[in-house]
Length: 159
Image (cartoon, rainbow, N blue to C red; front, side):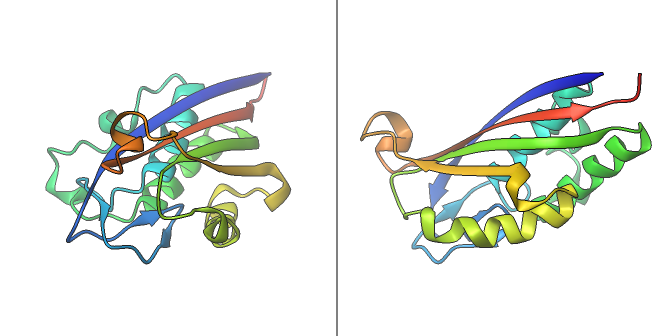
């Protein structure tokens, strides 16, 4: 049996924060705010995986009211969710994702993101799509106040 999951996340860009996407520190004058490291790409993938399992969202599994998750590496949270999948006998077939940001340019960082995320997900680079888009100046992303990410996953589950 196969199941799909869809995830979305958006975080504000603010000075004084690190910019972490796909587990990669990206040099930039601002970073994403969040209870964890604010990695919106990892968060979107987590939501997609949890959704495919019918398990709610990242906030239900890693609540921002729990100080244990304060400043947590989102790639580590992703690893926890992948462990849940494996415990249920699920296998990730592929992940497709989009980062929406006006700046910085994401394209040069995608190979490093894949190098971090693929081992965590347990999939080859050919099974992880990461695309970078702008919002053409529209909305908070277009106004350079936020970065948004979308993810879609396909899981293979035991019958």
